[in-house]
Length: 323
Image (tube, rainbow, N blue to C red):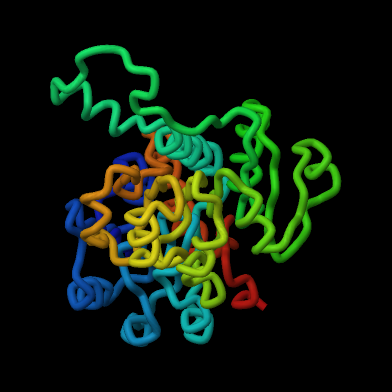
């Protein structure tokens, strides 16, 4: 009978679903498995339910004999070398759609917190520094009526734009492909160049996948194009932003502030970011509502179960593998 390796703690409903039909080797810890441990535990397994902390490059995939599917508990899959998996006949799946609205909520949460200096205000009150009302005490940037520039106008980017319209924001976007005319009309969104978006936006929100062409999409040159009152939001992937360049730009007030949920070398981050008051930091939790993370776990389990039952997994990233 086909066996499944779950590399790290997931919601128990997903484990229950799989154990009803398959033998399961479950690493029920938050630490998960090191790469050598993963390779060893995968022996004799036909499916792996993985997470973004599992780095499954070509060298690792070459050692996963007999594995038919890797079901990633994430919408992003930059932790897996999909072409190498395809070459080895391994199906790869992700969990799209289910986290769209939750991630968009959080992106807008970061936008508001950074614009209105919420972490600074929270610390100010807790420290006992608040003595009286002042005309410019922790004054921030307005959100209503401002211009929001969105890099990556897919599911999440569009969901963020819908939230922004509730604040009367103007929407610019930059994407390799134009949105459908009805989407542009609904949101009043306009496709612009990268440089125009950076120069014109009061807020810039990143929603692109991590690809070779999007690594350091935002670096020193791009930050220099932004308004000194602009706010940068990243809930995509850390390497989309040159973290050292951003830390420098925030320190020199090249831009107003930033809200970051992802980092280049998670869980490490540029040490300067920890000292700056004008950045809001979160530990990669944009999709972390209870309902959404539970559903992500279940989707990955359903993808694995489908593949091992001879069915096409619902969220297959490399369909060419099936011919």
